[in-house]
Length: 210
Image (tube, rainbow, N blue to C red; front, side):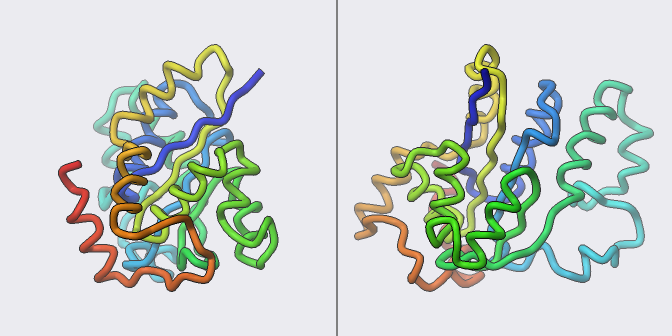
């Protein structure tokens, strides 16, 4: 039996770290999914096309060849696995969320959400992946505000251990929902205007220390 576990992160960098940690813990990249806001255009079409002068499949700004050479065999294998997932990043626009970058097994479902299917929004895609409706609303709003979501399909026996790994840099969803609601938010609305790059920056600064 398998379980699907998901976590919300403040930004792509935190989510990427979670992906790498999952890979290092033995989760195959085919069982990991990442969705990250691209409201600030951190992942540009130029970069996707390989404008960088060195290979940087994991988008950390460092030459993958140097990283592989400098890492031990075990670490190098983990980095290579994570790069395998992150090399598949693709751009799409999600109603109510705006531009996102996604990779993994949930990407095709998200494509349906982008086309107006799957219950009409990213919430439908997340609930299909096993996220509760309550949490899916918060995750979708977090994405709209510049966040990222990582999901992983894992054996039931490993779920607790891997949840702890994902929790290291994850958002406390209950606290974040309370903060949203205190500011007047009720639930994710697909008709809301996506955040601008400036709004995303301010949102991230707001929760930087939380």
